[in-house]
Amino acid sequence: MPRSGSCMQAVIALAVGLVAGAAPAYASVLCKRMGGGLLVRDTCKKHEQTLGPVQLDELGLRGPTGPIGPSGGGLKVLDATGAEVGLVTSLQSAYYGEQSARVVSEMTLPGASGPEFVGFSVSARGVTTSDYACNGYYGIYYRNADCTGDPFQTCDYGSCSSATGALLFTPVSVNTDGIGCFVRGGSEFRRGDFYHLINVHGPSIEAATSQCVTGGGTLLSPAVSCGNGSPLFCAQCCAFGHSVGVAPVHQVDFSTIWTPPFRLGR
Figure (cartoon, rainbow, N blue to C red):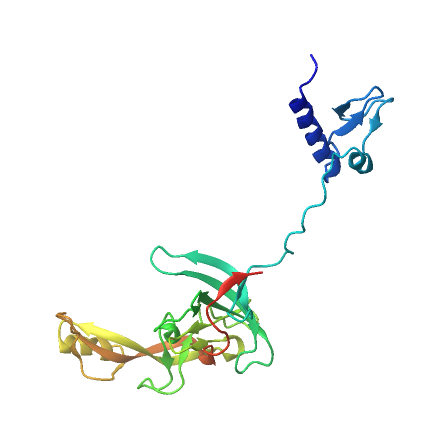
């Protein structure tokens, strides 16, 4: 039974795709019979013509070249002026809140001898900020027993290391005033006795005070009611920490580097 027109077109389309594309070695080819007609075979027979790109063009079996797509490259965040903010490393869409991205940018931070890779978070509104950004995940440490002087952050875990060159990039957390904080570790790593600024609480003034001074800490102010109807008493304590691994906190102004709003681009 002769093939229908639609069936033959499907065969031709399949063969054209195999011949014209970057087909693997086992792909079929399109063969033209001496009496006319086209067949798809693994290898054309002796009296059949194997059709290549030139013959396909002559028969009108290949369409014109389509438009060239965008060039490859990483997904970037751009500011309102088109300036690149950073290369996207991850995207996040919160259940409650705005979309955000984690980016890496190359810049020279204060105290550095040259450019380095810096990681931080952004949203459409600009660089992501937090009231707790410069406090560090484990809080701030000081050399002085009253928690004054130069601030330090723990450098034993996560985003800091005592080994020089151990980190791929420098994480920066940005406060609501646009000031970013970071630690380098490496040669700046210190281990020793430091004082940790913490909040203590207890069911009485005596209990809150004891929680601080029993471990060698210093109460920075008298314990008072925690407020909001709480039965507890709260105070700030400069707690003693023995053999703590820390590194000094550095600051960088992120408030004027880029112009919001931000958008994705390539």
